[in-house]
Image (tube, rainbow, N blue to C red; front, side, top):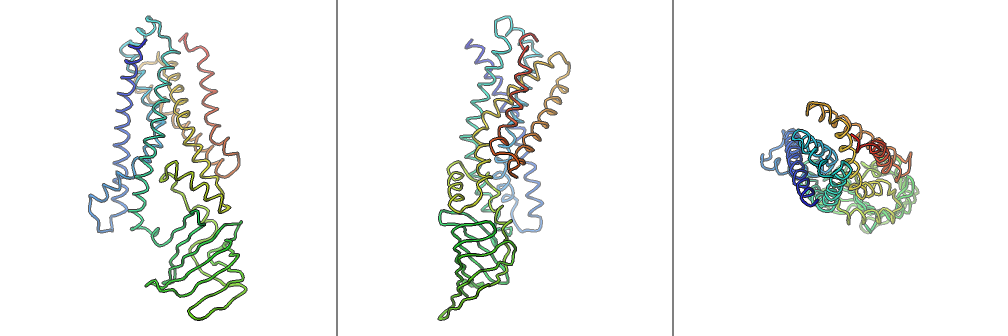
Length: 357
């Protein structure tokens, strides 16, 4: 049995590395084209665009691992079908169920390595990518982040730089806020303190504002402040969760809770990462069952096309469920585990008589 496990493992990882290399090359190529288009009017060196492409590619490759694994399993079975090695397995007592178990274990190990090593590596590179590219986007002017000290907003409008710090968010209101306005040379223009700020629109309504200028102070019942942020923009302030490793994601979740900010997106992303090895496991079993059920069909290309067809269905099913969870139409757990449950049910149905095929 050890000889078979070693033989199967070598073939599996051989095709896995091959598919990984092909997919990675394609992703890198598309990223290079995207970066060249972005910087076409900028005076930057080609090496810089190539460097950004390398930094950005791993996070996109991470999202494609289900497809990579599915295609790996397909190529594995095509190889043992064409060389009739599957018949040798059967004559030696290695049933289809045992073969699938070995592949499932290899896929689970791969999933654990992907989530523990590759994801943390890719998130670090993504973070560097965002920092470098922010110089050439509006992100350097407009910034909103959440820390253990509350919500911090950096804004630039009408030749003024505005820094806002709030302890929490309650519906459409910033609570316990302190605002500092600077001129272009970072000289303080005024400070504003308020217990409550209406941010339902870009034109903030600062309630019971206390205004502090040099050697002067005043107050207003309602003070209007024009900004680039409203509650909707702030609610999407951290769309690049892929730039955070597990520790930073958990810290962000704690900071969101302190700020009374919705943790739905972070919770979903964390649960997605935790369930990722299980997802890859079910994908592996599904791909194996598909190949064993269509092994009588001649033509490797057609078999691959069938696998690609099902991978697209799984991809859109997964995305649809994720959208339902992010919009809170279904629970977070349901949005993550519903595609897994469908995959598991499908696998169990096909697994029923697989050893007879």
